[in-house]
Amino acid sequence: MTGPSQISLYQCSIDLPDAEATAQLGAHLARLLQPGDCLLLSGPIGAGKSHLARAAIRCLMEENGEASEDIPSPTYTLVQTYPAGDTELWHADLFRLTDPSEVMELGLDEGLESGICFIEWPDRLGSEVPGDALTVELSDRGQGRRAVLRGPEIRWRNRLLRVENAMKGPDDTTG
Figure 1 (spheres, rainbow, N blue to C red):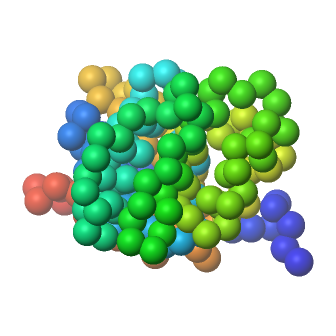
Figure 2 (cartoon, rainbow, N blue to C red):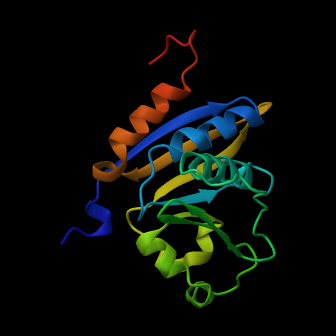
Figure 3 (cartoon, rainbow, N blue to C red):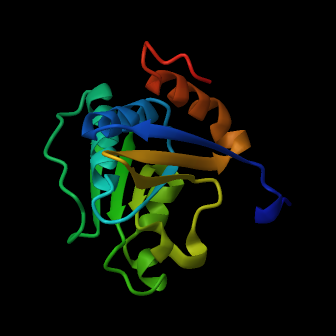
């Protein structure tokens, strides 16, 4: 069995000049997600974690013929679920949790097994962090943001390369 320290990670950085770019990143990621995937969204308050998750959830719902309803931040409810065809989407905001044992009370293990999960404040998971999850770290960069995406290479590399290419503008000749 491969231990966590032996897993090869793939990482990329994407500049997000505005909220629209953050929403585009969420939509591009959504199109590549499959049941069992988990996105761990980290960054300071106001970094765009909920905005990115909402854009991804909205995209997945619409692509599966679901009505794109209001998608509130789960700050106070802790977990919101949404239908997307045969897959359930889980959006969790763990900011208010004080102990990792509280996570299992939310039923998040079910979402991690068969749904697609978006988890804000993943540090609250403690040792329960899914080893095959994609981490999306959002940080300030000038007037915009930067997203650093990192996950096990075998699971995420090809998908992240597609996201990187999709996020490049038509005038972008770098990389």
